[in-house]
Amino acid sequence: MLEGAGFAKTSPYYIVQQGKVGELTLMSDVQRLGLLKDISGAGVYDERRAESMKIMADTATRRTQTQGLIVDIQRKLKGLEGEQRELRECEELEGRKRTLEHVLADREWRGAE
Image (cartoon, rainbow, N blue to C red):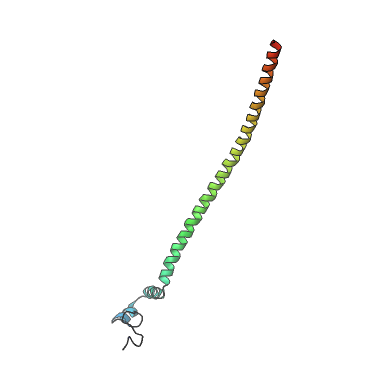
């Protein structure tokens, strides 16, 4: 008859077990607050919030590390770009040197003829 009226034995919200009311009256304020948080789901919220805050802190730390790596990579890239310019200049000068050596050798050869 109670189940037909909406009171199920499995639901802890409708039926209070014997001794629970007395236990509630003997609880301290902190214990009652904890019980209310459990009933309302605030405890689960607090746990999930703490986990989320930890994840956010970890993410911020990783972001800072990543930004540091990006700065280091950009610094190295600028250095490599400078080296690349120097290498191209050196290759160009080597090419000119070889050309001049060939011209000089050709003049010496023609002069020797």
